[in-house]
Length: 323
Image (cartoon, rainbow, N blue to C red; front, side):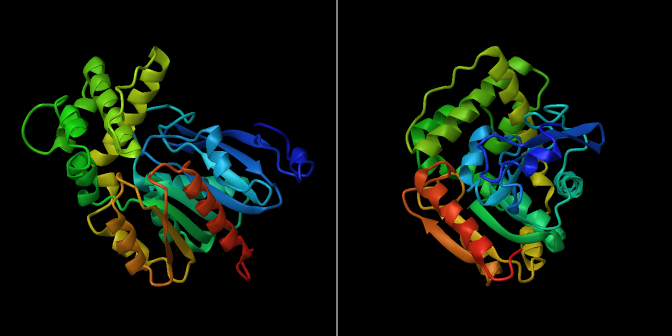
């Protein structure tokens, strides 16, 4: 279980490495990997990764001021270092929300600031709406509301951005009907080789939209291929079920936040999540602050986005009575 509790009091200057990590049994044969880094005496800050399916990486620590915050990272069910990796059983949005509460209790956190981007913004919205008493506020980036139109944009609507790259993506799953359905069916299919071929094209399309130009087809070694297949199968599982959120649920979730402080950050060049989603959520949360981040897209590590994220978290921490 990583370093002992004694180590928490001996690193007030926030080393870049975690001072606590472990696996938490959350039932249903799932265990969650988690780590704590930053200032043990700082404001607790929960980071929710995207995907669904992506998992956390050491680089995610760089998104936050580790001298100021007690940052908690964890891999959601079936993701990253959580086990069993790639499992779709008992893996829904409701399960993830319940897992976050189990993790909070396990770590002895009374309330925390919640931050997430892309799918992480969706999960953060769901969690904060259902457990507002556990939240100090929310800083959401690259707003994704998990609406059918948001999913359709990525798979079909964004073709207007890079027509040739999109045609290459669509060609990997020929047929009629919605491209999203064809991709999901192939990735969730029993033919691993076929699924991996589609995953590589999916990755290529995603990278093309991130870069704003056609990207190369990724070359994957065996270990990376296995990880990516698991990752995108989790994502396909969620997309197949509309992220386990009824259409329009995001409005009901937003209405449940009450006066919880919320900052919304969205990159001007984000071609993966449309700005309309950020505008819609901002309109549903009159007390929220929406910031358009110039010179930033969907990538959280764009320098401008990292700076905006750190500033927004500092804004939350500096607010009167925010303890």
